[in-house]
Length: 201
Image (tube, rainbow, N blue to C red; front, side, top):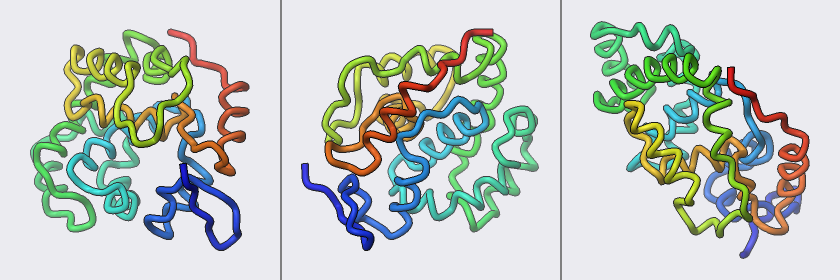
């Protein structure tokens, strides 16, 4: 697989060449393991908004999304009502899609239930950590993302199809999908080796 070389000359995953803002996102976030429930919930929410759009659009609006959804605090978002939906639909800084906004609010309530069931979102989703070598980056689903998608849908989550969940797993480090030769691949592998998978509550 061909790699992208930024101004510093270092090789990175090819998709980094799609936009300047992709490089810091790739170098500092993408593919590194995450156990924080707020970050996991935020990413699932943003991946849902990304459906049918480009990740660049969502990344550039991320700060506005965080402001609009109160930092993606799960308990706060679960209490959002029609007034909040109207407020968000009027917010030009985010993607104004009623179905996706309502899905985030629904999913916050489902996240509360999942935390009660498993102890944390992290403890639940990390059950689906990829145990096999990462597939080519051209692949958009995996057996693990299909299984996690089914598990979330069974629990009432919305906008969590296998492709959306696979992108979430890539970004949150549940799979090391940094390309061979990418400057971040070994870093991600070492972080995963030392990562303590959250135990069920």
